[in-house]
Image (tube, rainbow, N blue to C red; front, top):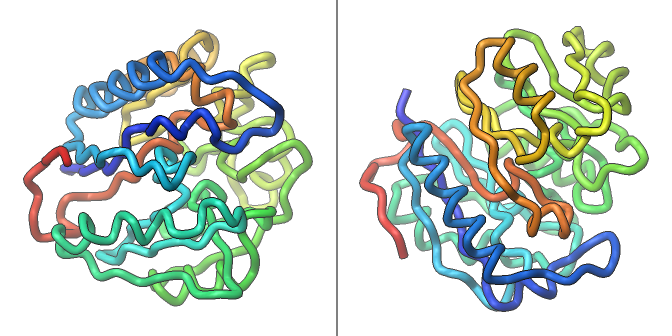
Length: 263
């Protein structure tokens, strides 16, 4: 299957991105890491559209939160974080050029794409400060899928901060999501101790993009048959981001124009 990814370069305003604690961002390093991330996606055979930075949105490089694409529909989300509302709308011109049908999440619904774990064709959405039940209902209606609210375990910003579906009924996850896996009949694959950040690993078919410095997780995934790449994303970990947060990936067959471009 051929895939397309949308990413957005961090702007100068990224130094003001939301974070759980005060941090100092090395912006030149963040830009280099983002460029390397886009190249890594290309190495996985994915066509990459990289949008220009939008200085209105310090967190705008985290496009996964602003946009969900499924079944030929692009759902623009509405984050529970006020400073992030409008990020999805800023991507609309690109989505229109790709021929996707666009739906906008409406108040009082709130939704961040980072709260959504897809298990085949069902969405499990963390009930967090960013996503509420009305947002989940709108996701289900817009994308024509079953969607379920999941109580958020303590210590996680987004549900996907703690786990990723590997396919085949397996969930790579931190211990806090072990019960979530069991309740849904999934096999829990524990993230190695001390490598909890690697729970946010990007999986595309049998490719895995693993945050750098987590060799046990990379080895675990290789033993499960994945082809792994490790990538330094330290400047994004500072603002609670990870490998999945920096892109939205979907099959090219879901839009009309498959030519990759950079804006």
